[in-house]
Amino acid sequence: MKIIRSPTSMATWSEQLRRQGVKIGFVPTMGALHEGHRALIREARLRCNALVVSIFVNPAQFGPREDLAKYPRPISQDRALCRKEDVDVCFEPTVEDMYPSGFQTMVTLPTIARRWEGEARPHHFSGVATVVTKLFGIVRPQIALFGQKDFQQSALVLQLVKDLNLGVEVVVQPTVREKDGLAMSSRNVYLSSDDRMRAATLYRSLQAGAEIIRRGVTNGKAVQSAMAQVIEKEPAITIDYLAVCDPATLEPLSSVMRQAVLLGAVRLGSVRLIDNILVVAKQARRKF
Ligand code: PAF
Image 1: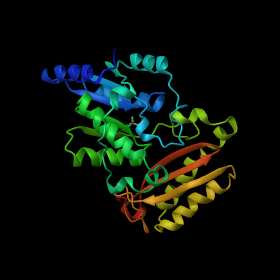
Image 2: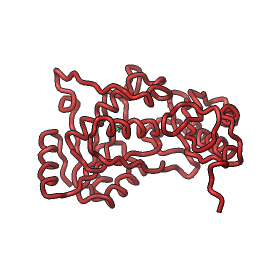
Image 3: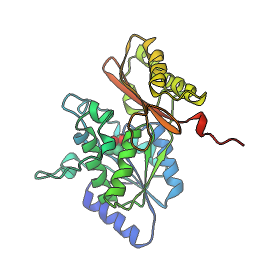
Image 4: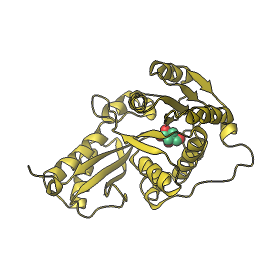
């Protein structure tokens, strides 16, 4: 496995392969790789001939009071996982490489990025959109894989690629979960042992919402309150938002007639968790 740090060398490597007709797959990450990343890497490996994983903790997507300085950076472990999964290149640019002095251009956001995480973390998505655009420009993959756990991020990337004609096929893969249902995330390591035991409550609340939709409840507020009831049983958890949304627009649904995405964000101590479930309404399911 090659480790490439300079964007110019990365672009040259990709250009040579593209000229030979090699299909390049890409998994962008901020490192601290876990089983969710491994699943993306494995799926990417099956879909391409050359595989690049980027490891870059992107300062532009962290707010001033967020965890940029303490974000986990276990680079040797990350490289070992990539080697084991037959990754061809680990692209590890520095902050100066990605944002040299004089850097000015930021990508502005589509409306799907306005609510939910967009409201809670005002600079986050413009940092994500900008770095993903830059990484795609450097790595020039034909296909890139993202996790459904960051549902709004995936929607943003799909829109970005369409609007800016980036020519990358974006594949969104299902969330990988711990045994108790907690969505895998690099930030789970921050949870205290007590909070770790409570953390799967978020997933259980989304499941409760999904369950009543599957049973035929259509009222968005009723679904939201069924989800809230599960969380409210755990006083140590604070709700940031629980929402019943249209999966395409991420606007709240007053009534669920077809598909919905249930989005949730909660706080346990200083840790913020997000998760989501896609659900098809009873009325929309085909009868055989
Ligand atoms: O999901 C992530 O890890 C990051 O937001 C991404 C897509 C690598 C951009 O920094």
